[in-house]
Image (cartoon, rainbow, N blue to C red):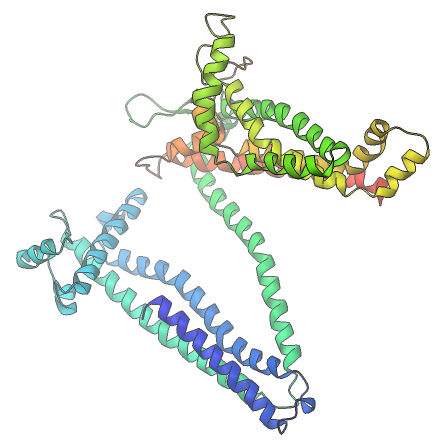
Length: 490
């Protein structure tokens, strides 16, 4: 049964259960809702909750577990020579799924029956011709082993989907029947429903935590595999980045220091642009601008946050880069050799970060109690003195948080770096040199036919783990600053 139909049936069972549960509760009270412990809607909601929540939980778990089970069973039937190399398992399963999809499409279009799909062999030329007529080609290079695996893949998936459908529907009907039997006047339906809603809220709040844990473990396991192939000391303290994918030009140099330097250098220049402009604009909008100016200026500033980063990258490549070359290039000062440089990416990235700093700082400054302003004015302070000595210190924890958010955004930016800063990994103090960042190299290392058993591909996960740890340290530092200064105003 298609997934959409299964979901619709679950919703229908829950809806019918809601109506029947509510009706049964009213009937048990003789039609007088005052005799019920809870409102009638809670009895119906309790039946609907028992019908859909356990069934949906089993459905989600089953859909997550079935691919792993099917893949393991299919791999167990393939010859050891095909799956002995860890790097080829993904390619083998990709071929198996491609052939299985071709067989499924052929069955759906009527090119063959289910029995033919289950018994087809690579030597069956007439079936191949029928597949070609409907535009579904398995390809002449399909081996008997892959075709056998595809047939088993189809069989296991079909059996798993059927068993899942039956089990989910039985659980939904059983849950609805159980809750329906409890729908009597004395049943505490409201308490039960509220506990279910509390569990739902806890589950929703746990999603972010579980997602972070999942990302961390995905990075950690692949990083460990990388350090089994490449020395950790050479990675963390190496000053040369020169990956070699050909296998002929010697071993790769995968030192992370040039990438870290480029990442922090570009982010530093971006913050030098974004923080003063964003903070000064926030102070102006919150303390000096009138309502009309504020209603126009703030939306215009926030428009910058909605522009795609690829547009900023093109702006850096086509406008800012040539402009800087005309000012600092060979014909003038001779500092800049090309349009792609740290300064190009830093300036454009700073423009992109202005609304992050400005909008958040503006909201934080507006949250400072008006009584603190009035007290300062009452002591004879001017507006500028009040801003410097009262408002900014009171809003400092939030402002630091806004700056750290902008810094995290700058560290994780990719497209502006790719188009505006170049791809050279180097250690240089010259802001007019081309450099690159960790995020740009993560993309380049995983682009194309990457062999995930090689250090040149696994290094992307080590780079991601390094970036994760640095960002975590940045957030811990920001939390320390916020707590330190917030104590003065509690």
